[in-house]
Every structure is written in structure tokens, then in C-alpha cells.
Length: 332
Length: 170
Ligand SMILES: NC(=O)c1ccc[n+]([C@@H]2O[C@H](COP(=O)([O-])OP(=O)(O)OC[C@H]3O[C@@H](n4cnc5c(N)ncnc54)[C@H](OP(=O)(O)O)[C@@H]3O)[C@@H](O)[C@H]2O)c1
Image (cartoon, rainbow over the protein chains, first blue to last red):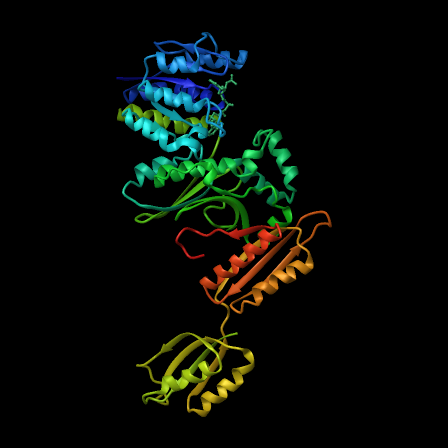
């Protein structure tokens, strides 16, 4: 039996999803010879630490009832540095101004000899190559499947399954909120503002929807993809971005009458990094509806491969994180 | 206009030049020549397929000159513009503006706006337009999109272009 110790830094939708998925899969994983033990959990108010493994069910319950997991006063950085463990799961909020607190958490993890698994886009959209280098210099594994496309295994597909292929280009829809808005506008012929409000009420769009609707969230994901796949060291500021706020229901109707849909498409390849609304033929594999995400990868040997799935959600995102944790468990 | 002509040449040297010369003389723009050297028509002539751009006004004159030089014109057809693209424009599009924009594409000679649907929900609201542009080839299509892009930028219109897949033709 291989015991793998980890901490969850950030205990919101994704952090709790990770805890729930570990509870759910504990026995199945033991049968595969892997014993996952969460030794630390931190949220913004405090932390819980237990070197023998935290009781995740009661931590989840306490978070639900009290709004915090805090039992101890240690900070996230203390947990990362002081507790003996293999992996830091960094799932604090995305900050694209300076990447914090994620950036310091990840750096501290590498400096302390811990592998990192994350869903936090901020640090990767700002300093991808620095983080990658920091991991490599310390002989550690850095996995970030959940940062792009939620549950969709894009990086796994490109780096593992398509190993040996040269990737020529990638197009995709990497933001579920805008996809939902465009889909609803087209289906119901409703104006942008109306559908945005509806999406906010459903919890699909945030109170401040700027990052989503202006294409910034898409740009962050695109840049992470491009850096990881093409070895670039771009930041999200290098992406040419056009959002969806100016799109009218009439435009969508005109498109629909001609068998097109309008989608916020991310494109990388050939030195191009763009996020912009595009006309997509209705039956095209990229024309996925609702909150779905999709990525289409053009390779030299395999040709074109397209995958779609859920781009967000607590347990869906945790699926990618769990997969990364298990990759490390098997390869370290 | 772009014309596709089926000609029949006598099976003696120099006939192809004889066929091409009047097209050049009348400022035609030859795009392709398909010379079926080893085929024969029932009358023993060699069929040739030529595609070229030319002013409509001189087409009759051209046919005249070809026939006079002994080249038989078996078929004349207008070639449809070969590449097409759909584009959406959103913003404060005014009728005069869109006319002006269309003229800029049409006056290139290699592209034209063949379809336009306009939706104007109200004076204060943004209008939406759906355009189909045809061009003589992919390169010309790209050039007409470049023109449109510049106009859209100048007039602060959002231009929604078709998805183009990396290294695949549009
Ligand atoms: N939700 C998704 O579907 C999804 C999908 C893909 C990627 N992501 C990314 O995953 C990350 C987490 O998303 P989420 O939806 O779980 O966000 P969330 O619900 O807002 O949770 C963030 C968590 O981080 C904690 N936190 C904030 N500042 C902290 C600090 N300085 N130290 C320790 N913990 C801190 C918060 O504490 P409190 O609980 O005390 O507020 C909260 O528990 C984000 O970067 C997001 O962009 C999310």
C-alpha cells in the first residue's frame, strides 16, 4: 500500500469537491494500492491539521455548518511548509492581478519539496514558465488539468495520449458562462442583459461577470494551454481578446437562419492567440450548447481530435484534480 | 466577370497561343488553362478549357476575334465566384454606411457582397447585418476580409468572422 499525504489549500466549491471525491473513492483506491490521506485543510479563516489523516466527512460538515474549517491558527503557508506531505492541492481563488495567494502557496510548496496540483488559473496565466521551472529545478511534478476545461482532460490528452504528435493548433470554447449566455440568447431571442441576469440568478454567472463576458477568463485558459503545449511563456495579456457584450439577439437570429451559431472561440497555434466570437456551422463539433466546454486539437499524426464536457462544477473539477493526484501517486 | 470557355483547337502547332492572345489583348486575366492534348472531339479538334476574368463589355468582341482566327468557341459560361464567406457586423450601422462598405468590397473587382440581411431593432439600438461575400479565390477572400476588418474597426462595429481552423482552408 502506498500512502500519499496531501493538503487542500482553499476549501470552497472545488476544495470541498476534492474532499468529497476522496471520501467517495477511498475504498476503490485502496484496492488499487493507494491510500490518500488529507493531512491539512485551509480556508481563508484558518485550518485543520492532522498528520494521521483528517476525518473529511466531519470537516465537510463543519464547513457547511460554521462556514469555516478552522480548528488551528496555522496559515496556509505554515501548513505547506511545516507538515510532512507529498502533494499540495492549491484551490484558492483565481487572482489575475498578481496571482496571490496561489503563487506564494505554489512556490512555497516547490521549495518545501511538495508536488503541486491546482485548479487556480491566476498564477499559471501570469508566470507559467517560472512555476514550471521551479518544479523542475526541485525535481517535482506540477499538474494543472483542472485549470482549463474543468472536467475535460485536455492536458492528459495532449501530453500523454497524443504523445509523439506535434500539435498544430487548438480551438475551443473554454468558458461555460459565456457559452450559456450565447446559447440562451439564440434559443430564446432574448437580449444579452436579460440572459446575463438569468445566468446570475442560476449561479452560472458571477455578480461581477466582467472576467467571463469580456473574454478574460477564456484568455487565461488559452494562455495556459498555449504555454503548456507549445512551450511558450505568454501571459494572458498577450491574448487578443474580444468579448460577447456587444452581441445582439438579432445577430444570433441572422446567423441561425443561415445555419450558424455564434460561439466565443479561443484559438492558439501559428503564433496566434485570440479569443473572439466566431460564426460556427451549426453541426460543427465545436458548436456545443449550454455551459459545455469543448476543445479541438489539430495534430500532425492523429489529425483532428475534439473533446467536450463540463467546464466547471465542484465534483467535475475535482475529477481532474483527483486524476492529477493519482498521476503523482503512481509516478513519484 | 469570370468566364469559363470551352474552345476547340485545330491539331496543328501554335493554336493555343492563337487562343490566348486575344484574351490578353482585351485585358483579360487568365486564371487557368486546361489543355486536353490527348483528347479529340469527333471532328478531330483538341478541347481546351480556359478560365479568365474579363470586362463583360468586351466578351462578344473576344468571341468574334477567336472565331475569326479559326478557334471554335464551343461553350461560354460565367464562372461563379469560387470562394464564399459569411460575416456578421454589429453596431450602429446606417444605411449609407453599409452601402459604402459594400461598395468597397464590390469595387475590388475580385470580390462582391452577394447577400445582405439587415436587422435594425430601433434607432437607439445596435443593428446587426449578415453579409455573404464571394471572391475569385481564397486569397482574394482573405483580402476582402482585411478590408472589411479595417472598416469595422474605423466605424466601431463588432465583426464576427467564421471559424477558421488552423492550417485548414476556410
Ligand atoms: N468552481 C469551479 O467549477 C472551478 C472550475 C475550474 C477552476 N476553478 C478554480 O479553482 C479555484 C477554486 O474555485 P472555487 O470555485 O472552489 O472557489 P471558492 O468557492 O471561492 O473557494 C475558494 C476557497 O479559497 C479559500 N481562500 C481564499 N483565500 C485564501 C487564503 N488566503 N488562504 C487559504 N484559503 C483561502 C476560501 O476561503 P473561505 O471559504 O473562507 O472563503 C475558499 O474556501 C479558483 O481558482 C477557480 O478559478 C473553479
